[in-house]
Amino acid sequence: MGKRTLNLSPLTVAVIVPVYNGGAKFRLSLDSVRSAVPPPDELIVVGDGDTDGSSQYAEAAGITVYRFPAPGGPGRARNLGASRANSDILFFVDADVTVPENVIRLVKEIFAQHAEVAAIIGSYDDQPKESNFLSQYRNLLHHYVHQNGREEASTFWGACGAIRRDVFLTMGGFDETYIKPSIEDIELGYRLKKAGHTIRLCKSLQVKHWKRWTVASMLQADFFQRALPWTQLIHRNRNFVNDLNIGISGRASVIMTFGLLGALLLSPWQPLLLVGAAVMGLMLFILNVRLYRFFLEKRGLRFAVQAIPWHWLYFLYSGAAFAIGTVRHLVKGDQGLGRPASLLTPEALRSGSRGEKRS
Image (cartoon, rainbow, N blue to C red; front, side, top):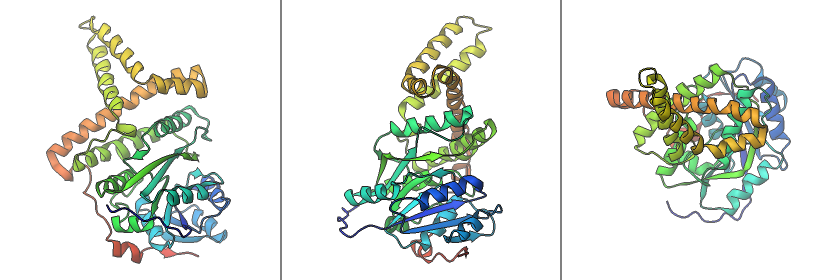
């Protein structure tokens, strides 16, 4: 890519919020965006077939709202919002996060000071609102991974991610074949990197997450909506990046977890395998000791001890999903785990003819 010249005129920012039955959390999210100082130059809400009054709440607040009659995924909703925006920067915010007061100023400063950056992503903060263990664990794990990731990122993040509008339009937006929340943002990040664009992980850009996680919702999201389609994306791009959730230590941890499980299952017939299991368990702990120390510092000993088996379970089902996805890819190719990227042309994305305007 050629070097981008520094834009001396003030940058404008459009905040785009897709929502499907966001409830009270969406209202808090929207109120936090409206309270930003300075406010965004544009605020666009896209109702993704919502039926709980979320769109009506935004309309009553005087916000520009577009709606789809039925759900079709956050990628489609974000694309519609982007097609109707006029600002230099498109800032995507999920309906279950609240943003700090200085978020618009921070986004503008980053893009103004770094002309080479095409997109930026942030992270969740370390103070999630839901108090149950799984919500705290999931949020803190995400926070830790992003805060310890490389600043030159390899993926995009739709919950708190901003991109230059001209770049977004040129890339064709999000892949709309992901009809449920999935890896549509990661897929966009892969295309951005392949095209030579720079994505920056800005660790000072943090938002508060309000989602309540349960065992069922966690397994559904991690296994079916992330790990399986991400495996297909990796094979399609033939690109095993060493970053965030798929770094080298994470891959080694997956191997150790399966080795530990295998040794325990076979130990009734070969008791010496218990020694091997103990060794692999120790190695697994050492590989992730910095994370467990972080849990200890943030939430205490009981929380840290409780988090360890859940973290190891994460490695187990992530590895299983990768194995299943790889086999299906080898057997069926690109047809195994979803279709190859089906993208809008830049012209179609600019036209934004879909969706109904509500205010």
